[in-house]
Amino acid sequence: MKYNSPTFKGKILKRYKRFLADIVLEQDTPINKKGDIIVAHTANTGSMKTCWGEGWDVLLSYHDNPKRKLKYSLELTHNSKTWIGVNTSLPNKLAVESIENGIIKELQGYETIKPEEKIGKSRIDLYLYSGEKTAPTDQCFVEIKNVTLLGDDQLALFPDSVSERGQKHLLELIELKEQGIRACMLYIVQREDVNLFSPASLIDPKYSELLKLAHAKGVEILVYQCKLSELGVDISHPLDFKL
Image (cartoon, rainbow, N blue to C red; front, side, top):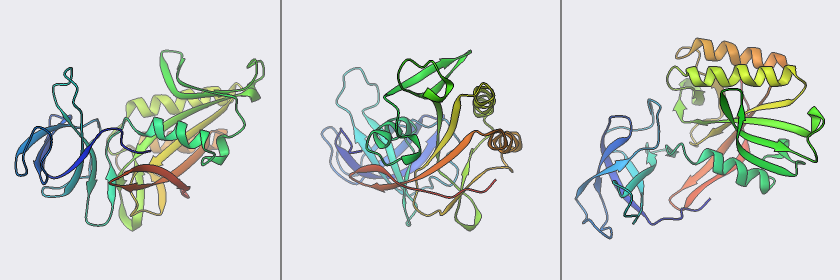
């Protein structure tokens, strides 16, 4: 997935109020000069632990939209080993693109992909189905999570903070599976310095236990790693997991 907007390099100074980051620019942009300190929007509600440090290189996208208060968005950070995708608005788009392109092989064979399907009082990220949806086997619900937390021994971990919303999604997937409907958790790992995925049991033990329960009930766990560069982000290959 290529960036649709122009991108520029900088260095991060701090992240604050969850959605804001101060960046010193390393390039001239259409409205700022190299060396200017700008405020970038950060589309990430998590802790972003292990995803940034003062002085890290970053990649920003620039948006010339009069309706936007902040003209820059934080896309990638770099820890001297890998780019890290911190824009949590991308994984759902990456998933759809990779299903359509045949990269995510486990989710092939469905005629329609519908984002944000309502289930109960919440929504599941993707609803895949074929035909008239009359049989449970014609349907598949997929919940998507962005993974950026680095643990010991090159482990990719999720979540990076207690996630009551994530816990609720696992319970909903378990309920769907008990109805005979295919249900999947898709973890998209947006960093390249890891080689295995695991739930972050020390951060959110309840989420970890629910994921183990979901797996035991037949909810499928799919983990895919991304290839990241200044040109864009693409899902590249599956990653093993341990529970």
